[in-house]
Length: 366
Length: 80
Image (cartoon, rainbow over all chains, first blue to last red):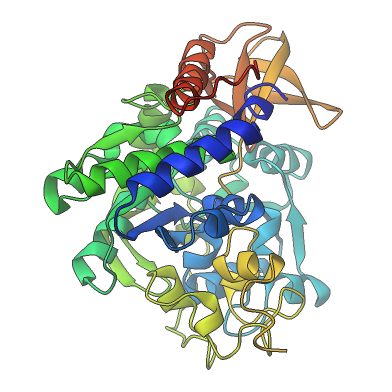
């Protein structure tokens, strides 16, 4: 496929690996923010190729994983409201809240439907005017503009039976939270590629400016990741922290302005609770007053109680990059993709799911 | 969740909608965030929306830079 195959050239990848290994005169510790990067790094075997020179740790870039258990409970409770038809992306279905999953709710009779796009949810709302169609809005900057565009369309069509439970989150504040906590020593950040399509690579300027840490925005093919890692190794070794855009074919410095305007028009930036972090200031998106009629949190006020994490689950520490999945006592034992206990094992972007799928650390636990 | 795939626009209809082929299946997507997109352009598709226009120039610049690294290492790669 165009823009993919040419970025998998194995000969060029070998050269880039050789260059990184030569330039890393000491081990360089990097965090890949994005769960999609964690999976790509495993899939292409990059950890092994760079072993001893580059240490890669997973970050919080998995929207499903960072959704707080109480918010999941909220979604599950919404699915149980008479007349509600809950629509969601597929990866939310099996994530455990404190009292089961959306899949369990569906088995018990709730009308929960999977959609590929929020526009599909809008279509369902048009087809079922007698039902309250709620879309579960989960995702980072990549996903939220599409939800915003869908809400604008719902408003224009006066689709009063369509609403969104907005659990959207912003990524730079979480990156700051990790660095401010000082729990992990990092020499560089691999910036999320598709978040940066929207925000622009400029959104990461605070990393060199405020933390003296370089950031390289990367795509999801081996050459994308290797060129980003190479840039970070050079910046770290020469102590010249900057933001590098290693995903130029998709990411512009200023991002997608239309998408940014949509976010601005539909959402207010508010504090949000992240699994593993607690509340992070200015890190969530809530529907603006002008869209209150489409805000599921207002339309269906439900009493929410804070809930504890599943006992033994260390997703929180994994999301903050403090430990790697095999360090969790449940990993590969009680917690597997078939029987996940925490969200990091459920989501296709979860670090535990990536480690399990590629067999890293699993052999120790069987 | 942030998965997005470069896909070519086959046709554009009214209301900023376009038809693309994803994994052998024709699908309608929205071009509302990429109003400059034309038939034949490649866009990144995420949850039913095109979120950017792929830059062929930038793609080539990256590939040229990789080739240069290979060259500096004393080995020319005639891969493209």
